[in-house]
Image (tube, rainbow, N blue to C red; front, side):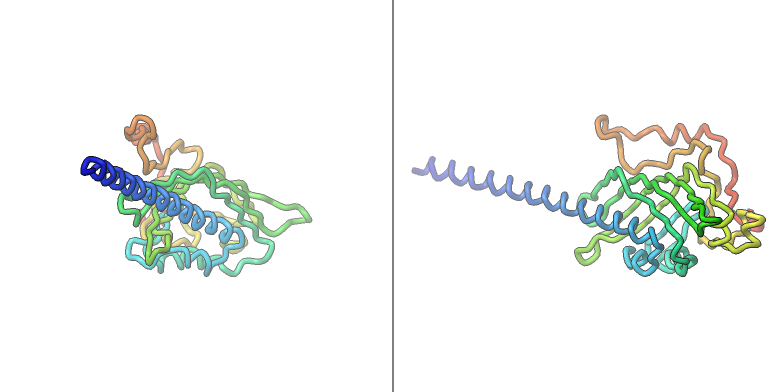
Length: 244
């Protein structure tokens, strides 16, 4: 009888452990799905530059930032400054950037996460002579997320690599005004990051934006750092001349 009770206790303990492991795995999958929903929602809100909805995706946290080709905007104030510059766009504006191919890595305590995504889509401005003038874009997102009060939010957004992006004159005018669009001096576009980018990593620079994850088979860091070190990157065209 004692032996049978011992084996029964061992079996119950084993099943409890397995149940706990399965619960952790299920919760991790639920966290990943919640993060995917946040990122995909960002893409849908970006389509019509829904300012309030975009800003509300970000955490209220001192580490919040948003990085774009011109540089990094710090804090919620910086996020509002970036997305607020074009919140009153005409109905003809269309900015569809699909959030695809995610690799998401949770922290051990599952309170933070990192994610890498492809962004691919089209920008359209005002039709000219009944012709739509689209701008195609393909980018890399490297994201950080944080769970606050049980809700996943964006902590850091890095929209870091334009592979191909040539705005039409109409689109430049829409964002920057006619005079700036005519000259298109990148260093005088009214941009206001808190930290300016030092180098131009846009296509065709060859720059590989650093990956947050190690190789899934070997467990080793990937080689983009060595590759990038060989590149002859040009200075950022966005940095104001007085800042150089």
